Image (cartoon, helix red, strand yellow):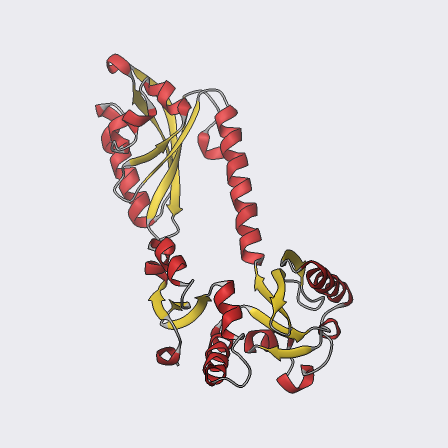
Length: 303
């Protein structure tokens, strides 16, 4: 099936690393992204999507363009419903049929609003009316059905002879937003605590980020801390224990908390409590986050 796809098929890693290039390519032909050896997503420009269905009736290219559109609609995970100008269904792609648990025959010719819940159907119908009046596409988020509460980003746009309604599930994106907001709130809380510093280290034990509080504790610019080995921030007596704890954390995922002496300007040291926990990044590379607090302050492991 992949060999018959119009456009190019690329790995997910290549797509992420070269997104700008593939986004430009998608203006001329679809870009299909592999997930575990199978096409899981396809990127196609809206203009191209519309062009695939806009071949002149009766012309030689009509069948070719329609066939290309059918192939794309068959593999994309986006829910696609195409209607006529009245809002009656003309075509529903397999992803939409699976999600709505309907056959192609069951939906042919009926109003789009009839296969959605009352609230969702009302929102989509109103959007179709506005797009008909203004000619401008609309994008909004809805819970598409009452039986399965999943949030979708819906695009309603003009399509030759009617409208195209495209829906992409974004529940995972909303969850990511919530987690990001929570992480930022914790960082703000930590940065507001007196003599509490934080940062991150990579799989090689190098500091990759340092808060202003850490720079103040070691009396050095943040730029001079990033790139150092984490253990190098501590005096010779503490360095061996820190090195062993970091290695165990990075190789075995075991968090640690201990006391150590942090080096400062002029070889002055500051007693601190050190805590660290594993951090798995988006590319599955492992690193760690760490917290430092002056000895006698609340144990960083509590935060």
